[in-house]
Length: 432
Image 1 (cartoon, rainbow, N blue to C red):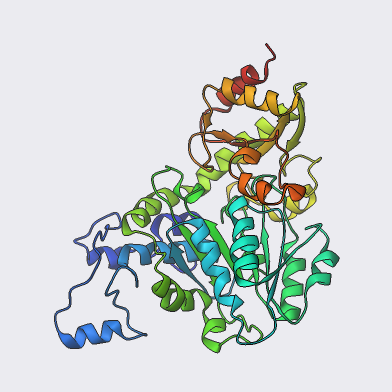
Image 2: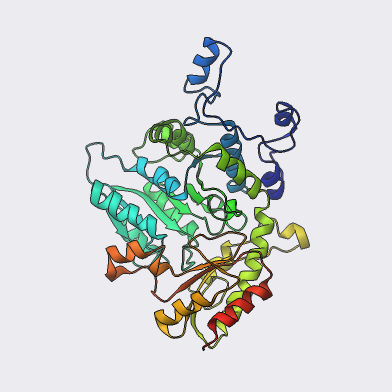
């Protein structure tokens, strides 16, 4: 499908007419719900178990359905760049973050490694870096005070820095970072820039095309918007040329992860989950477009509401990283629809009701259409209070560096009619 447009890649991926012919002409990708492969001979088994073999042998080493999703995700994330790109899939988004970062932290009997990261991260990411890496493995975790300050990033990089890490837009305050500027720092230091772009999806932002080296996604979110399956993805460009890393790792990082760390540690996605996500990802562009349009309208409504003190949404001019969002977040191929590219700013926003924590909890309890839930990117609109749920662990671990205000509501806008979403918010915010 080389040269095809984004939506065509999302629908067809690696499953073309030739592939279908091998599955009795099935129009949809088959679900290989099995743990192992049978072989016609010992020679065939040995060939498949060789490191460079195409056979999948055992589901921890790969599976045909999983491979189709890997190829589709790589094609979507690599869209618009000439770089060769490949992907490795995991059981969850946090599995993807761990897989993408852990192999870069080997000590090799050398000095203490460090990582430089934006503090505007998902709560579990903060816990992995601070607790699993910092406390348990002795990694020096250097949190950037201001993620928008390139100088702040540069001051923290030295010869033992293993990677730069940012989430853009971030969960939940939807802050962005300057990917091209950070990629220049990473290139100079010969280390990778790793970007979590879950909230944007490749339909709105493709960090590899902006200079990033590795991208991670929670496929549990918008890629799997039906909410039926969990999954994660690591997508990397080839030929990274990293300082002090093995040639195999730099040549094809995602392939290296599949053949080594992922195979050995076993955090693989199930074939069934890969199959359901394949079905969901087909409509990712249209779904993200619709959700983003509604979210922008909701953000403007809340921004003018007397019962709301603050709104976080990159589509609002008041948002601190609005200028970056205007530059980097575009609905993919939108210029083909009407001759002009169109900004889209994503489906996630946050707001603080007037009256503090108690008012936030009361508003949450009055929601009717919107679901109280800790997932996001689903076809159903969901809301939570991150300071009490998704980011509570990080806040409890370091109260002085609470990542989000305790009265902030996170709203993930789904595909219900926007009038109904706004009506539900209106009644929830109405003072009794």
